[in-house]
Amino acid sequence: MYQRIRDLREDKDLKQKDIAKYLNCSQVGYSHYELGIRDIPTQVLIKLAQFYNTSVDYLLGLTDEKKPYPNKK
Image 1 (cartoon, rainbow, N blue to C red):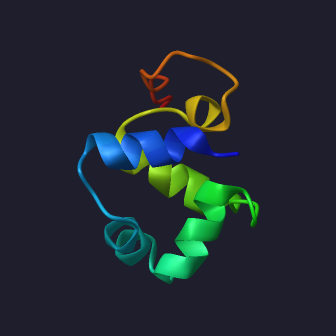
Image 2 (cartoon, rainbow, N blue to C red):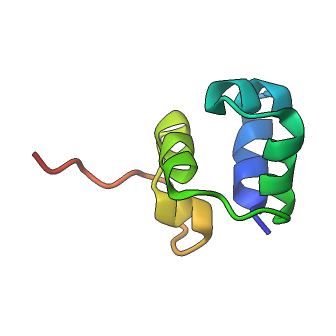
């Protein structure tokens, strides 16, 4: 279901355990996100978007534009 987070992780030659450590969760828990077994909480989506320098919309497949949105201040 969340093929994009898997693709982004593999593009950086990272293992699931590496991202799980960054997210402070177990490797199995992170694996369930990639497989679509568990929905990804909003805060986790935000952290992943920040880590990969992309938008949450890209992670969710709502856009094909990888570039993140500009920050509003």
